[in-house]
Length: 226
Length: 226
DNA sequence: GAGTGTGAACGTCTTCACAGCA
DNA sequence: TGCTGTGAAGACGTTCACACTC
Picture 1 (cartoon, rainbow over the protein chains, first blue to last red):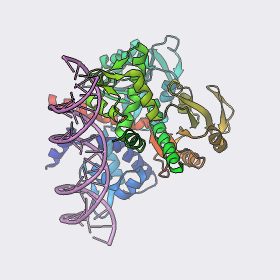
Picture 2 (cartoon, helix red, strand yellow):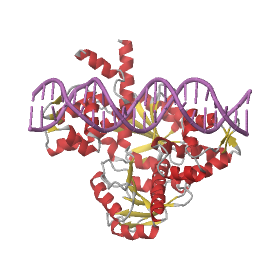
Picture 3 (cartoon, rainbow over the protein chains, first blue to last red):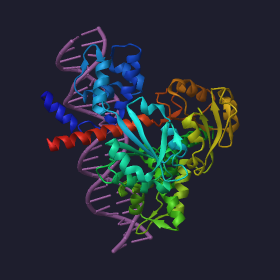
Picture 4 (cartoon, protein in one colour):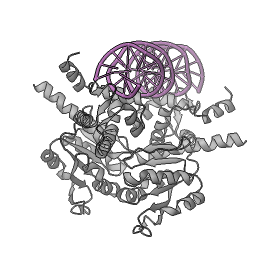
């Protein structure tokens, strides 16, 4: 396959979803390695650092192209560049957070965003009492500003941090304003048009999954002692 | 298979992990349905409410046993009971949060926990300046209290909401104190013994995955207009 | 007729194992 | 010799489609 051919294939969703979800992990491990001064890294070492099987690491990285050196490993700096480019992190992304309750506050102040090229461009809330409040250097604006904010910021990522009851409405507003990537923290199932990407983080669900496993461990122990 | 046989099989990790991860979703939809007074629900309706394919709903629920009625659907109350029991939610779970920064604050105040049988039993922080501070009705305690807290609370779930640099240490302390289920919010890869269940929620990773898709959508559009 | 429960087909992801290259 | 890149095999998850039951 030609260089251009591979490039084109790459841009067409050629990378399996499961791989894409691990790329940020590699990226974090690689930047940590770069900080310690390592010039190269083997798939085994990267596997160790990320908790991923080394064959998987190699297969994942091979989707970016053949950037490894047999007998040596991968050049750390190189890989950082390639993964960043693949993830679209060479440009900064604006993030719009709707809902400035406990969670919205925490997200607005979360250092992990800024450190990876994400910049919170606006905080919005439907509650007039909250509008005007300053959080992390930004004034809270009314949700009615949404369309303007998104137009100013260009394409950006929307974060829904409202109560479940307001989530779908807010989501619809985000979509109407032109946002095509949404991260939902509200414990609600949201519906979006097919061109919009939606991911969710559900804290209660995570705890319930852990509870299931804890529960089963307790049951298993009882079986043994019975 | 006998009734007892199926029961035993069920307790032995017979339920696929992918199914377990969806059970909390069904549970939430079902409690909402119960509130509206619906007595029964079909797999199609439940699929609609949760955004899951209906065949998947049926297969997931069939792992709990044969609780559906052909031609009718599932009894809502019944299903709530069966899923709750399967997830181990018939007892309350204690949650210990370590790290009372922005995120820890938000988690401590998160209503979604209490509403599903999870109770925050302690907030801990390594920073002496934070110890004693009151958050959501609980006083922040020093991490050295961890062992005592866990002993008092019985089996519980640990939440790591510290900076990445402290996460592994805190995780080790949790494990040493006897916690066998840990939810990690720190952007770090944690290592735990095999008997400990570890899940992670990584906000920056979620954004990066969205960025990838947004990036590809932008690229695709450019291809079309080119 | 309506809707569950489930074998079978299909697709995706993971893991193995090794050829091939530095 | 060491490590990547990758076919092939296997495990897992999803979807289809329909027999069976209420």
